[in-house]
Length: 496
Image (cartoon, rainbow, N blue to C red; front, top):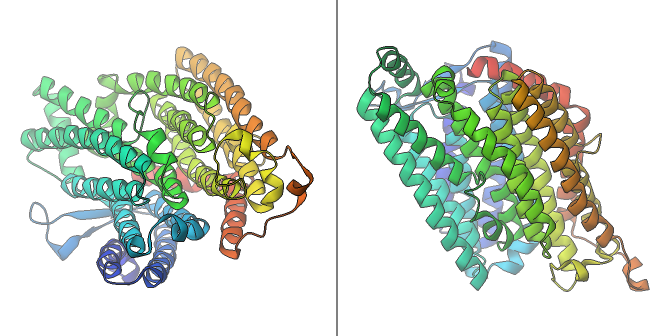
């Protein structure tokens, strides 16, 4: 085994060790250590992606080199490595763009704790991407939950206390359902490794055994992950959780956390239960219905918001609906479109939250639309960033969101007539609704109310760099999407 094949395991352990180390450092040193680790992880993940690209096949890594059932393993292919690269990049840019607000929103004695949570969060994201063991997946689901709750609460205001409480209640319900489902699955199969469970489930289903327990298992796991990823109608915790944290926390929670649970759900569908069995129980049809409702009702809720942060948060409900719609189409093209949207939405939503905080900063720290008039002139770079993210969400050509919607539209052509027309109509309605609230916001921030609005605000270099890199990433996903699409396609063939 070559050194590069050890990198995914090293990355997970490095983040855990980084979290422990940050707990005894001062805030600025914890920040430097965290940014250094994330940069190393990005480079190592890129090396892993290049390795599996050249080898043309996935590989497994046994932690401690103990085979099951005593040990567990991770599985690495093109798709996993690609997700690790993008997750690392977006994590770095979110912290870079929100760095100034971390200093102002979090008291000095808790700033190192923020980076402890970031390291724990990154380790859990990587583990959920790479793990081939369901018990390990559950352990890191809980680490992810605790870290996410801490990232919401660390700003330490009344709003964040309520938001964190809502998040923890809903998230722990989801975790409980997942744990019950995994325990029952272990009970009927006797395995924890995904590949071994898959073989047992196929045999159990072929023999007609454990039909009711298997149905309960699928329901519990799907509902649990749907709650944790905020699929409509399980999204009640999302608006507050995304709205009231510091800018970096909102960017990370909205762009990465829910996506890791969706990625785990896809792994369970393909590698654990089996897509044929999932389709036999019509799970994808139920997810499709909830996804369509989320796409439309999430956008309608966004239109009624007067706070820019809550508007962006409700937009996430609609965008998560897009991803589940792709999964619900029960076609390979639908899964590919969903995976592409995981990346494109993450790049756009982080950009929107970071930019919105910059606009609020020059508007007396108000997040209300009447107070944001002219903010695009007062903070030029934030205005550019928000406009780019908004145009992407609407689906304007050259931006990431447009490419996602094209891929979704093409994927519907391979589905049943009912799903084809339902998805096409929902895409059209959702796009119009997206345009209503995002264009309204863009017009608001570029509507000057007096001459001083023409005076530019000098943004910090790190904020400017992060926004520009987010904009370039968005354009790359729009213009160079074919390269990413082909990589996802190759990765999916290897993944399945």
